[in-house]
Amino acid sequence: MNTSEILATLTQQCVQMWVENDTLNIRSPKGILTPDIQAEIVARKPEIMAFLRQGNVAINSHSVSLDYDLSLQTIGRLIGEVGDKLNPECKQPIIDPRLMAQRLTVTFRPVPNRYKNEEILRFREELKLKLHSYGVKVLPWRQATTEFRYEINIPFFHWKKSIKTRVVKSGINAVIDVDRPPSLISRVKKFVAEKLYQIYSRFIVKEQKISVTRIAQLIGWAEDCAAKYIEDPTNTQVIVLTELNNDFVNSEIPYQQKIKIGLNTLIRTFSEIVIGVSSSRFSILNMNLSDSVFSLNEIDSFVLNSLIPKVYVPILPLPLSKFQIEQFESQQSNYAQKLVSLGKKLAETNLFPSGSKLSEVIKRKSYRDIVNVIVNGRTGVSYGFVAYAEPPHYVGKIEITDREWKNLYPIEGFSIDEVRQNSIGRRYLKTKIGKEYRFKQIPDIWILSARSGSNKTNLSLESDIVRIGLTERLLLQLPQGVDPQVVDIKPSYDVYVMLGIALSTALYAPNLMRNGLPMIHFHGYPKFEWFQVNEYYAGVDNPSVPCGTYESGVFNFLGIYNLVNQQGGNIALASLIEPDHGTNIIASDLEYLVERVKIGCNKREIELGGKHFASLKSVNREQRTGNA
Image (cartoon, rainbow, N blue to C red; front, side):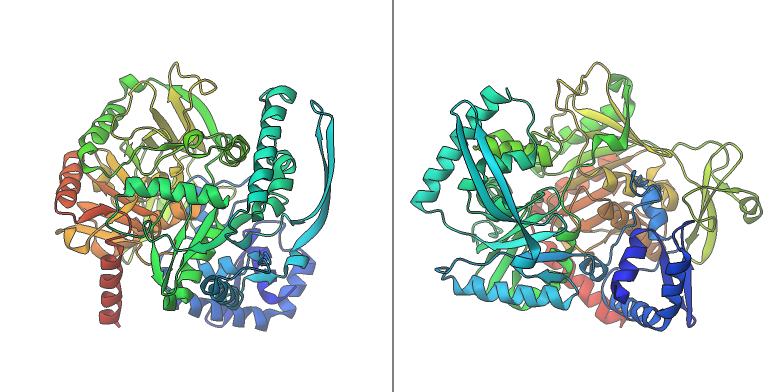
């Protein structure tokens, strides 16, 4: 392995390495650094130090702020990511896109011989070069695929067919294809395949769940899309290059119309990401339904900050297996009632378009079944969330002295320099606010949130609200009397974002959360002129990781941390920007948040879509230039 591969492997195993004062520093969980690995590090020490120094330069030249005192591993564990069976230590968050790139492998599907769109062909070649230049491994199609043979057997018709093809190996992160207009023959084949699948699903397996691989086998012979050639659709994303849809990137077209345009584009191409290309600009579309558009000379920044993060962290809901499931009496919760009120008061802003049922948008049953399997059984998608965090829950001293900190005990999985616990198991965090170290109790966090797919502006207190807890693990409380097997009630994709914001606010801006914390997220942005005194924003220059990832939770945690260290604790309202996704807004008071958002919408200083993102970006650029 080369140096970058060694470091990537060690990072995935939660080994931290950095250079300070010409010394190579290493922090590792027990048992990872075997004698062989230690010998390899010693032998490659000059190369590793040079690589890390180069990486630090790259990171510092990028916009991701590394001016914080906690390790990313600790932040990730604090907001709920505690690892899995394969790696119980942690899942190390990677937030620098250059490091993301070094962990990615992609391939380009060969274009048809008669393909004539020169603009897309030129963009395709440029994209390949840029990905390679940032360290993404670009494998030739033949090397990225393997021969695969399967047999279709439809017992009802006694029809058998042996299919031989090549499929993209499961270790490939993405396959990049071009949009191929269907021919008459391909339309007929798809129709036949779909009818056979419907018969098979209804009469043979009797509507039982079918694996993605099996569905692909049954319909794949009739398809002419990259999804047909994927060994494991849950591991490999499909990226399709197509002609730019001018309506989708038109800021004057209502976002409600763009939802159907975007979903139908993704479904028609059966892809997770669609890049629209024209002679002068291009766009990127995924399930976040961002209408971001770029000029051709922005391809460098686009590949690094937009495309690579989306490939590295695909949109996936947090599986229910992450939670301990309980119940609560939603009608007895004061904060559940406040959440219902928050949603209703925001109805007139039109920032929360109703969700779209997958069954209504995806007409083909085979496609619908594949999507439902991939998104963990969800039947709908919605855009935006409303949530209400309860005041943080403490037991004992909220803050302790340096002397008391030194008498605390270590916690398995955490650095003893960052997190310790007392005799009754309450955890304390050593953190830096300004120039002063503080030792704060890590509170229990509880958030009332609208369920995924609900109407955010007309919530049912009895069936639309879930209660999410963050203690030493993740808890999910469903309304009492609601059976999740009968009612589609699942948490929002943005659980990590909510938890990251709430925990960071409790630690660094407790006055903002003293009486609870209303939170909203919508797929648009405020204009720079909208902000008033003691209202701040952060995150404009972050890599555009999608929702549903705990990397997005880490960025929002750091957003609050950075605002407090830059502006102080007197924050009336904070806006946490997520590029290619939308905006999170929090405030100490429900009425204040609602009033400010309504004013912004009435003045058209807050709108759905990416219309106002450029104003925030340009101000950030000017501020950096001025500071320089």
